[in-house]
Image (cartoon, rainbow, N blue to C red; front, side, top):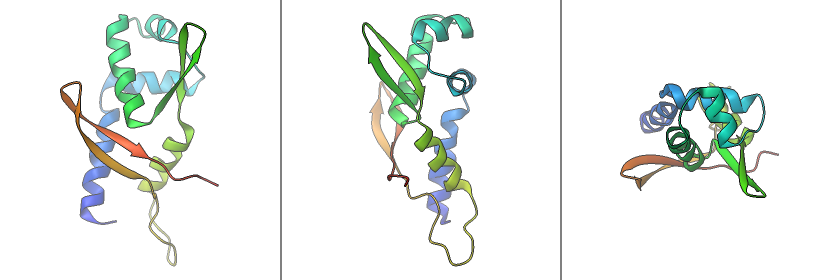
Length: 122
């Protein structure tokens, strides 16, 4: 893996350096939840949870599906699988692992954030 890819990968993993974002991912790994459920389980106020969810959604690790008046959030398993494969060591005779493309968006509510583009995983 080239040095620039490693830098991008390290920055992407920084998405999980925030304790609240990591806890949200752990909860969503157990099953889909709405914001109210996440707030109760995390014992945090809605604006804090929503801002962390927003970053996870923009990075592609969490997806939201509208169900009536609420949004149900769940992990994007394809994104997590691609992230895991991007960190794997390629075997002899294989092409580069982790064909996802990561791009830094100029602004994400005043912060820089990552947006992922994932190939179809067949």
